[in-house]
Image (cartoon, rainbow, N blue to C red):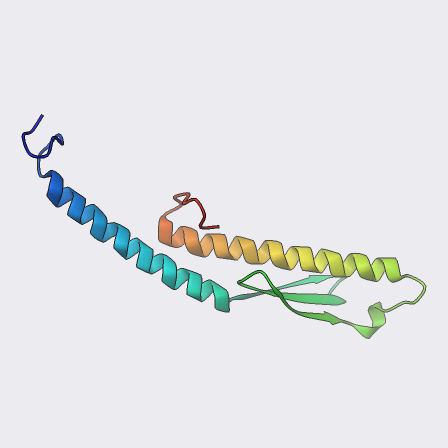
Length: 115
């Protein structure tokens, strides 16, 4: 064992400084990625495009567009199912896109509290 800081291979404090710089760089890149994600949108459709939903990067629904032909007073259940399916797909898709963007910064490391 080296006499310098008790770390094998010596140079313990230099390595610590390099690790801190690397962590600060990753933190800055993560902040940038999170800002980019906020501006992202994901569109999903259901019923062959009869219902379109747009979700934002902060997991909010920005818009829902329903084709007038999808509105059948005799079959409200079908319309509700299409809206639900499109909303869920938009949120799932946005979550996947966000995770991919963050993984590109973290190299796939699982950082608690990030997602």
